Length: 343
Image (cartoon, one colour):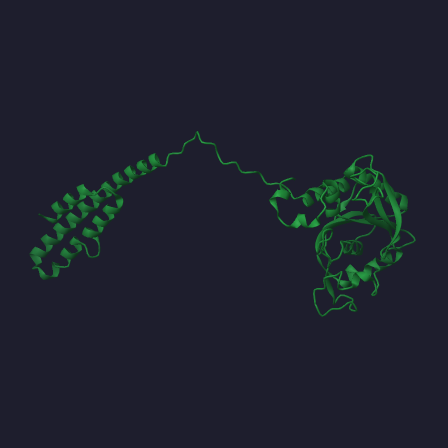
């Protein structure tokens, strides 16, 4: 039986592409039948060498053509068999993937931002790693102020103690108020902007987090009064918590405002009758505010005889907790889908 007859006989028995590859290797591979026959050419006389070489090349060409044809047939057959076996049953119900949602902090932050933008405020941002000057000194926070204590502030250099100050000491900002200083140093009044962002403090429990979000606001212009501040904050809180929420301001102290006030609103849960959340008072502290201290204006080169202004700051998580009835700030950062899917 010749080589070609042997090949055709074996080709008829091939039923898979894998078997076809083995047959190809047997006849056309590096150690295949035709390859071995070609190796005998040098031992033949020139006349027989030419005839025998031409015969091998014709056989090789024919085998390649038949292999190609057979491979095409087998591939088509195997694809049809696979498609038939793996046929999709379109009557089965599909897999439902729940859509994602926004984080409650993101929702409240967007809502608050939209309210202030509608009131004519712009949005400013600043670095989260701040110098001691912008975070403390420019805001009229003296060296002995408790906010400088290591238990409250994350210092970037562990060797920097509470007695260091100036541009050579850096901290993770403890509030977004440094943005106010940066903007005032590079802009002239009138100013009306909010500064949202992350802030950091060495505190962690059910109502405090080492990282949380704040929004600070600043208005500077001629003839700005405390009445303007009160009216703005009342309008803001009533847009967030409803038109009937009562608002009051209590005297307080902040180094960068004078006079200063704590802003309270009527308890969102008991409507003023007294409950566990408001500790029976009917009021909940919501933010701090006040008129910008003249020393802060002096630090940025503003004429205190010509300009006045007010500032306010609030925690986003606190507002979200009051609005959604969340009693543990740690829930915002644990990534629990049972919690997050409620929003």
